[in-house]
Image (cartoon, rainbow, N blue to C red; front, side, top):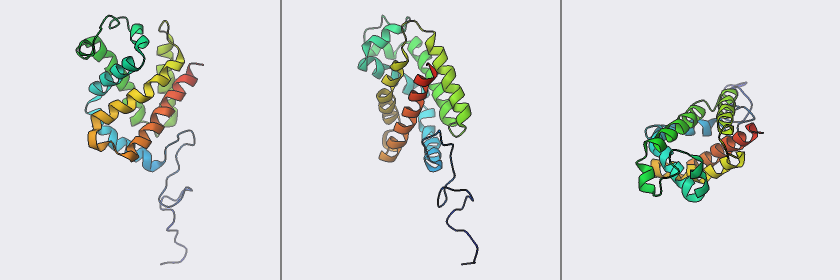
Length: 176
């Protein structure tokens, strides 16, 4: 080995062997971001399905949230919800925002700006409370697990848990 060659840090930045330093506001390592973006492609192929599943699981978890959606509050069964164009439309918008955040997660300023805009949009809805964002954690994780099937590993579960907690906590903060 040649003297003076630093083999511990291939990126040339602090953070350990082969590690890139990420924005300290982001609780994911560079490797976790890489794995997230790669794995997210499986979700991206089925964004609307993921979003519909997430919303249905939210309504199952907390039925009072469905009432806040004026165009679907009257739908009484999961089958009717799954067939609803209005639910699909909202799911598509929701997942487009999540997709934008995930695809740009390493640009924390951009991601935080997007999160703030989503929070501001929700503040306009009558009866909405910022704490309701936290209800989305388990429906999100369950929906992504269902869509990804065997690509949803224990490691990816950890990464998705960190991601959704980061997004949801910042959505709540942005409303205050």
